Image (cartoon, rainbow, N blue to C red; front, side):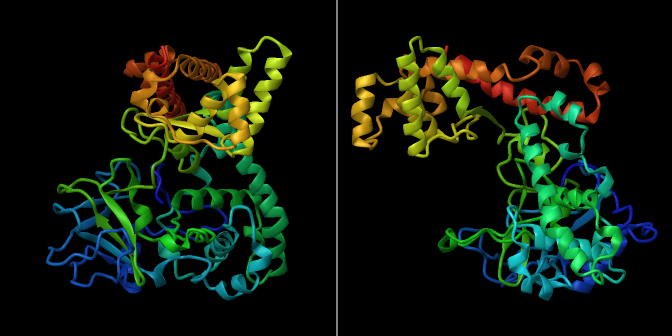
Length: 474
């Protein structure tokens, strides 16, 4: 999936020679060669059966004119409508043979045979090995596609920020903790699986691609640019599909209020307009319902407040326990509270590393937060009976934890929720007013570095949601 960070050609030890003076020309020529149809006429049968629940193939529509361009896009390369586009029109179709995955790469057979040895927590190792091989292969079929990639050494994911800067700018947002886990997993995966595999096949992987730093850059690139085909409804119990690279689709930038969507069919992947797109306007895909902390963590950019309607704020589950402990006085009360917490853990409503997720208009973890407030706030005798029943019974309407119903909750629930929000706000290095002062002063804001601006937007969006909760629980 394409990020809004600036796009530059791949450079460094795997770049291989001089860049094409106009990589877009080479890429569009390659598209024609592999049958990747940009701006086609929509035909009656489309590219095959649409996925269940997706928009069906449409007929009788005019040609769609789109252009790959730097001009008129929010960042780097993007796709712009040359003519007005209507909902349902096909923007482009990518044949499955043009996809770059562990199955389509030139060492696909080897990766399949060694599948057992390449299993990892991320599930990305086979694709990453495919990229490591293809990037250094002089005659890789995907070379014109690589020319549109960003320069790997200039990716803006927080994992590439100095640790001090990452912690200072993103303290309280959850990003530093997520990055630390990523870096530890990447290092372990590289030295335990990837490097031994490359060393066992020196004819396929030159010494110049045996680098932890390059591997880390490719992990970030896959995190930001790859797609993952969703499972069919009847396949929900299966392991998720492996990630794959989708040329052309990853040129599109992301917005929460997007105007295009990728559809999966047996023969190809189809990018279809979901809203009217006026002539000259950029075409935006969606990477899913992503909060700003997720966008900066996975893609290296954010949507400025208040554009990201999918933004959220987290209240760590252990923070609610800490807030509840503040209200205990005797040791017996603390022991009872830990008993309640253990009961919630048994019911899989809470965990030591989990979080309650709050959006602008809904509590995304409504069941978990409702259950937690209910159990931690109920009288001791009621809890004993409740624990013996080991069941929830019917949920009462007045206990509904929707945003609009929060003012109607029991006083004890509201107080615990409020105390939890106040503890969460203390984890940030700055308060809401100082963020507002920075955002309202354009002269000061424009002098901030790009990273400072992005981090400010993450912090501010989260704090606005948390302060909304404070108002609702007052």
